[in-house]
Amino acid sequence: MVVSFDSLLKEIGQLLNVELVPDRLNACRLKYPDGLFLQLEANREGTTLLLGTKIGALPPGRYRQDVLEQALKANTLDFHTGTFGYSKKNSELYLYAHLSTEHFTAKQIVDFISPFIEKARHWIAPLAANQIPPLDINAPTQKSSGMFGLAP
View 1 (cartoon, rainbow, N blue to C red):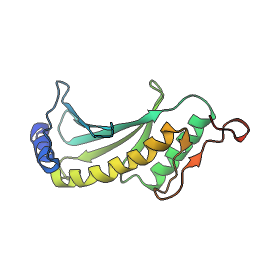
View 2 (view 1 turned 120 degrees about the horizontal axis):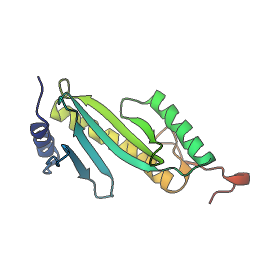
View 3 (view 1 turned 90 degrees about the vertical axis):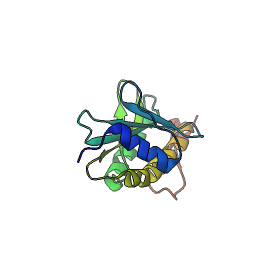
C-alpha cells in the first residue's frame, strides 16, 4: 500500500514533535539544533523515502582520497544506517538511505533516523577538523597525515 508523502511526513512529525511540511519540490528539510539538516524526499511513485544529509566538503588531494577510502570501508561494514556518497560536482561527502514506504512504518522510519543522524555526526566533527573519522564510533579519530606527517 502506497502512503502519501504528506501523510507520512505528518506521522513522522507527530512522532518527533515537529511540524513537517513538504516544499514545492516535494521534499522536507529537518534542521537540528547543531545545524545538521536532514532532507526527506519521496520518489515520484511514493514507494521510497530518501533520507540524506551533507557530511562536509572534501578538498582535492590526499586527504580527500583517505576520507573516501574510509567511507568505502564504512559502506561495506555498516550500510544498515546509511551509505556514503560523494558528489564530484560539489566536492562533498553525503550520507543517504532509501527506505521503502511500503515496508517501513512512520515509527520504523523515526527509529532509523536516530542512528542515521548519529552516524552523520560521527563523521561531520572529524571532517571539520581535517581528520579521518574512525570506522568504530567509540574509537579515537585518526589525524590527517598531511605532508611529512604535519596537519594544517
